[in-house]
Length: 177
Figure 1 (tube, helix red, strand yellow):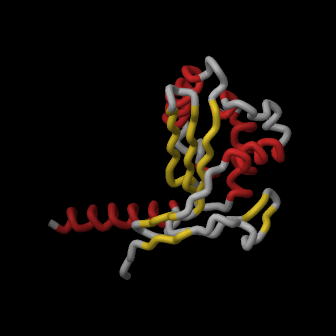
Figure 2 (cartoon, helix red, strand yellow):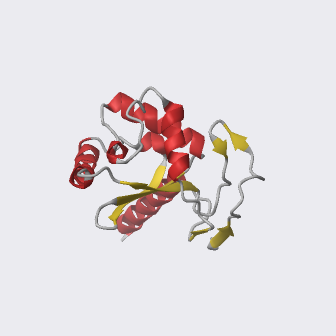
Figure 3 (cartoon, one colour):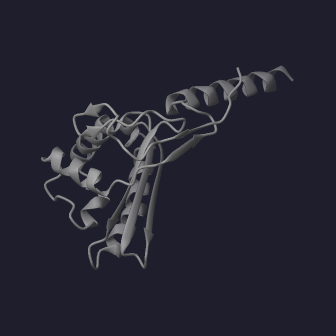
């Protein structure tokens, strides 16, 4: 099996894309699915937003499967422009509609609020108003024009299975010595 890195250019216009419940359904790319939002931080909320990182990291130590329903590969959060702007970038295995619906359910059930509450214009009724949550994301979304995958189109589950097989083979070979 040969794995060849791949890239996909994404056109600026979304008019040709199939429509989902919440707007265009972007194609699966070699990096899987994902989105980036950039939004302004509410004045005086940068420290609270930054403090959310360690809080989420601790929640994941207590429950490593906390975010599993989101089928995430990566998350990246960045505060920039003197902590006045925030970038969220997520790469995951499901399309936008499923990811956002799953996120609302997950955070509503877990009792963990979203860091997005510290962003200007974010709907505070997001747990009961999924369309408003999604409108905020779409309004602040910065679409990719190129996505690259070193191991294209593989899901997080595919990668975990491969790593388990690798570990099993390594253990077997070690026992044979």
